[in-house]
Every structure is written in structure tokens, then in C-alpha cells.
Image 1 (cartoon, rainbow, N blue to C red):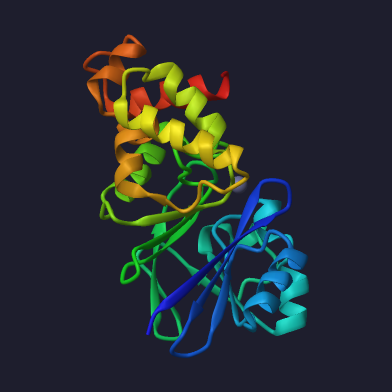
Image 2 (cartoon, rainbow, N blue to C red):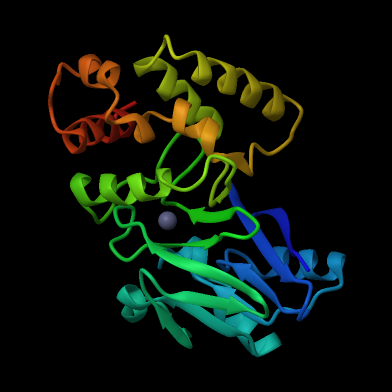
Length: 255
Ligand SMILES: [Zn+2]
């Protein structure tokens, strides 16, 4: 039996996700951005919340934990390295751990940078990656806590996942990410195609999520920090990819 994913908007520009293990009937929220939005999605599907999987400590990803835990008695799984910053975690996980939702296993991967302890959840059988603010379509999260070298290494590990992986990220930032990406990588045909697709989706009021990881590998400048043309753009020919990654991150911050 399969894992079903439900995608819905929450807060201003967050995405909410429910994952439902058909075999056991268990349902997890990926992060807890907003209780009302999560309750509406549960009601709509007729599911009961049993688990919450937390990716990082930012308020727009954890705020609904207390209310949902009180209402449903959910088990809350989250990053061991941010346990001191998140109220209500029951199970602490780190890179290499596996979390079971009924019969559906999720691999925990560390993706430091946006926050130091940021983790992502990867469901290999279904090809689903819940990346929160570690990896966006055509971008990555702002580097609030980390440093470029480890952030690049973490991003590269996500890039190593299969091309057919569907990525579910934390925010609808794709259109502005596309504008920045085109400004530094204007001749990239895959990027131009994705930017046009994104523009059409947003004009129709539709989300750009989930996105295909294989296409993003070709279009997302942060996944291309080891591409010679991006090093060249920043006058960093022959530099370490981590250094180019840092230049791209800084470029986006100032865009
Ligand atoms: Zn965040």
C-alpha cells in the first residue's frame, strides 16, 4: 500500500503537507506551520493526525505543535540538534536515522545551513523528499546559521538522490528564485524552460510544488555551484564549489 501526500497552503507563503500511510492509517504533518490549515486538510481527507515530523526550529514550522499535540495526542519527531529550541519533541532524530510512519519509512538526512540542525525527510519507496527550507525549487533557504562549505555538502547529498524524486519544500518562492537564477545563468535552457513553466503556473494561481529533482539539478544555480559557467559569472574560475556556492548565496541575499 502506498503513501499519500496532501499539499495545502498555510500562513502567508508556507506549504503544509500531510503524509498518510494507507496500510496503518497513520497520518503525519510535515512541520506544523498553522493548526487551522492542518485541521482543514485533515477534515477534507477524513484523516486523524498521529505524528508530526519537524524539520527545523523556525516559528513558521513549529508554531502549531502545542495545539495539535493537545488535540490529537500526536507523536512529535524532530531534529536532535535543535531540541533545545523546539517545544514538545518526543522523538529526537539525526542524520542516518529512519522514522517509521506505520509501514512507511522515512530516512532522516542532515541539511545544515538555513539552520544548523535542519533535517529533511526522504521516503525512498515513493520518491518523496520533504526538504522544508533546505532546498527550494530553483533555490535554497537563506543561510541564517550555517556556513557555505557544509551547506554546499548537504545540498550535494540531496542532489545525489534520484532524478525522479519529487521535492516538497517549505515555501512558494519559486518565481522570485527564477528571476535571480536567470540573472546569473541566463543561457541555461533548462532554467529558461522551468522559469516559463513557473510563470504560467503562478499566473493560473497554481503551486509550483512538488517539483522534479532531476529538472532542478539542471536549473537551480545552488545545485550547480560546481558548474564552470557559474564560477565564471562570479570571476571564480577554478575555485572550490563551496566558494562559488557562497557567492551565489550572497548574490541572492542582495538581489
Ligand atoms: Zn526556516
